[in-house]
Length: 162
Image 1: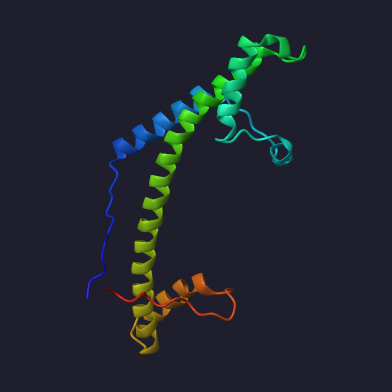
Image 2: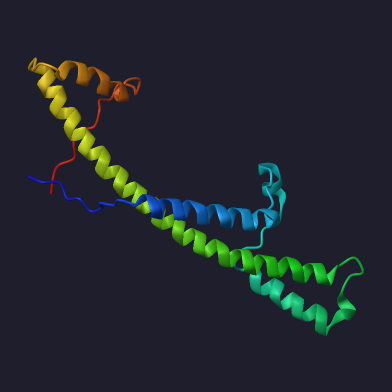
């Protein structure tokens, strides 16, 4: 019985290098425009989520058409700058989320397949060690370290094949 292999990716070194270079370039390009907030700062700031975007957009229109209601302390050009930054950065973020999701899903599937294959080997070596097959005990002793200090449970068996 064979294991279904849903992913088999070999990224050529030139592609890997190019991707890393381009991601570094994007990081460097955006670095002057990005802010790092402390967790406590993040907690207390009012958040502008998707529902607030139309509100802020309408406000921008109203401050221009009905300036008599603008408080003296409100900096309209800065409001417009902040809003446009949100629009630009959100566009970047959507692309990054799409990329992140694809990366995470591919890592999850590749990792799962590698782990299941490793569990198959581990269980085979464990059985060979129980039968005193030469060379198996040393491999088993090395690999079983992965499952030590995990409480009363035992290592997972290889999932059933479909």
